[in-house]
Length: 354
Image 1 (cartoon, rainbow, N blue to C red):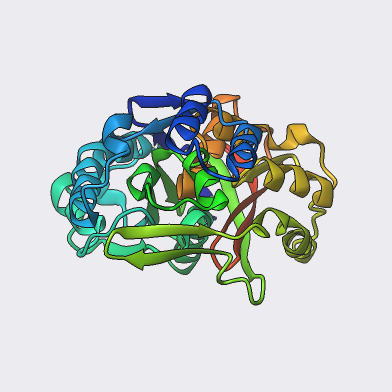
Image 2: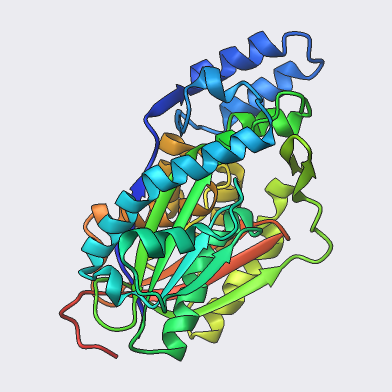
């Protein structure tokens, strides 16, 4: 059965603190009629630090979408291979052992996908399948795990590589002055993550069941308005309340598996913001400590989009993992409004394979 192995995560070297973010907001938007509200919302995110791919002076400029996308491509090529190599090493596999690469990103565009460049540059087999996912936003981390699980279920001897590359700072739009945009400017950070799903063997989360759920008629709540200046992020004020309709989907998935979503051993949840985590605690009836990995990601890195779920899982590994057969839930949320959910239990490489 497919096992999601230890993720490798990297964040850029340029750091911006909460205090610096608030001061930038005050200085650049001193006359904004809703400045006090925007400042309060940014403070309430609890994001202490974020890492960005360029110095803040460069981030605040807008040289145009073409130049920004060139930065996306060059930085991805410079930073992704090392993260991929660490994930392969942790899974005790070589590039030639990988059968499919699932690449997720919503903050830049390349065609062919970065998967083609990785195959050519890192020695993956020429017959490696490619699955780029570009339009699921923050939910794409969960989707990548689920598509890797599906692939390894169809091909039990196969191994899948997941790569998430998000440079959210390259989507900063200085002319977007809505409160949702100002909040986003203080919430999102940059990060890269990779993980291997082994068809056989490996230590990590033994993936057992997955599902997707779309809240009807919410496709405009999280979206990009694509203009000549690039991606303009639109965030509806109703988004923080989406855990109430999504929690029943998580409960339903667990029931189908004979589990209780309120009584699991670990939770790896997308940290879209503190309200998301607080509400999900309430509706799943679990203590705040259950989401400690997600909260740590949010505090230290901000919302790093599709990479959040993999970073939260990395933190579970760093804590020492879980007990044999410990049961867990993984979930990512994003545009649609979409939930990508998975159930799995902890296994070590020496455990009997099921």
